Image 1 (cartoon, helix red, strand yellow):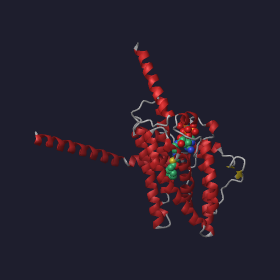
Image 2 (tube, rainbow, N blue to C red):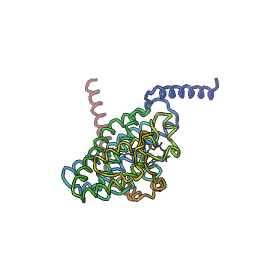
Image 3 (cartoon, rainbow, N blue to C red):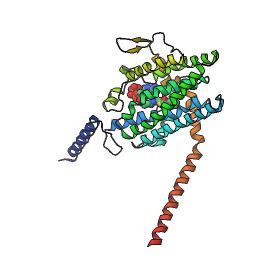
Length: 330
Ligand code: FAQ
């Protein structure tokens, strides 16, 4: 057998193992063989997801100093800190695919990788913190619970923990909005205004319509994604309608109504031009978000250097101790 044929046979066997594992709902682990496109598609999605978590800290962090009570401030600080943690789990999971955190951050800072469109909208009032918790975390959970069954092990495991925390976030947003909705008329109006502004961008979080989704078909065949963008968007709308009623708030869509035949709510047309414009970098806060992220990265350089120096020192101290121990027992 020539070298080329042997290589081809090995690749075919690997591919057959991979396909069988995916078909049997087994997990693909970092040391397993995987097609190059599977690896690169995972890096793309996981990196975007990680970037979304850390850029997503900014809109809410904007309100930490102005939270209306110590209780609300403590909750908000914990939530924003959780989002940083989610970013770290996801960067670590992406690193198991052979990329590095530096490389991913560099791609974010230079605009070569995306983050979620939703974080390019401003948080104008305190009620926006509630709307983000209820709608943005709510949409994130709807999208991410199926990712707990993603075929790639490290991503699926990271998602289990993230989803538990996101569902706590969603409840705090709902509780915050409920307090405002049942408060003074001015507070109620503030809650309604926030929902009016965050509803449509939340629906865009699920990605373009299925017929325009470049990656869905392949990602679903590989069981990275388990449902299409439109399926998850519909699920989210159906969940939100009764919740909005319980909140005493209205969803800003005159076309929203129950469709008995479909067993789902119909809803109005999404402004996809706005979505693509935000993705191109022309949303209300794109410039501000990325500038702030780059600055935070530069200002944090000394922390990374100190942590690396400490890790190197701890490792060399340990090596010296081990050597001394070996000599003492020789
Ligand atoms: N924003 O072919 P598809 C959170 C891009 S985490 C920006 O349909 P795919 C927690 C897409 O990347 C929120 N870009 O793509 C939190 C692709 O571009 P590319 C993030 C978007 O991957 C809460 C192109 O459009 N969650 O909120 C968006 O099959 C509160 C074509 O799209 C995740 O990342 C968008 N909305 O499906 C934090 C979940 N949608 O790569 C702080 C994991 C699409 O070719 C506070 N990701 N694009 O240049 C996913 O499930 C998928 O990647 C989708 C997109 C569903 C987002």
